[in-house]
Image (tube, rainbow, N blue to C red; front, side, top):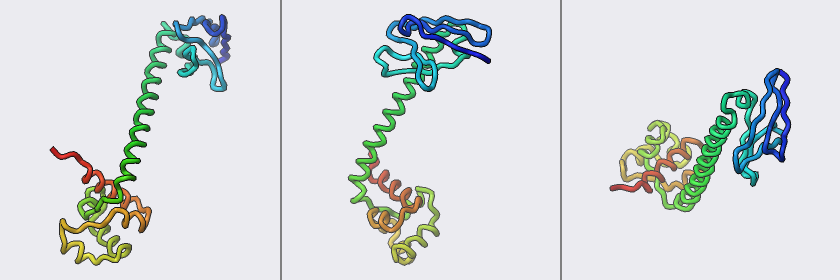
Length: 173
């Protein structure tokens, strides 16, 4: 289907055709229509926020209102993603700072999804700690997280260390 559009009045108006149907959209206050390599879009006058719409949105009833609703929802999701990313970075810095004092238990390994036999085999093969020593000490047995992380980048080890860190940093009431 052939479609085209032109920007008029410095982006205040976007007009064109989609197939045989014509359209003319007027940007709301504080916004203008523009285009880039991805196509037509609506953006804030300062250019900090934009939203690329499609031909279905242009032809819809109350097109500008619908475009703005989807744009605002999209901007909200982007803001949430930025907040989550910032929080993850803060959490990672705290984790890296505190990991040196964390001690990992067999229960931490189990809680992270590792099986007991695999954890005991890992302790024997990589850490040279006999299973009798691990099982004999019960809940008192632990290994420094830093020692585990140096031995291997295995995902099960990383999960166990993370579980231990979460256990040690959990707020108890």
